[in-house]
Length: 92
Image (cartoon, rainbow, N blue to C red; front, side):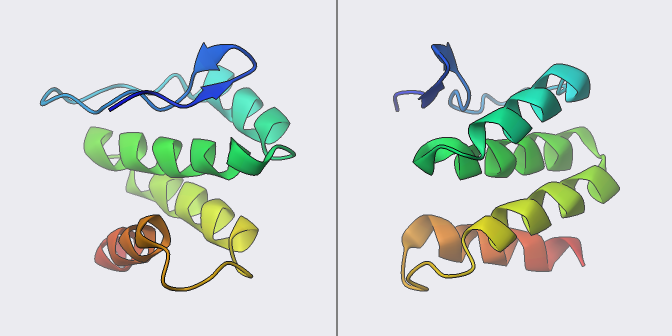
């Protein structure tokens, strides 16, 4: 799996079996900046997944909500959107 790139930096590397600790300050800044790009919404999904793995469920919920808000008009049959909705539902 190849990572997505935003501003020349990989933003969504494949998740390993370890529990990552997201750097919320840098990542949140990148998420806000990249939201204007078509692939930028995936930054929010990557953050949400990282927060979920690290146990920060409140931050994960916010990141999932941001992602779903950006993709609210997307085709509901897109696999990554289905996965994100299912992951978000498990957090509630």
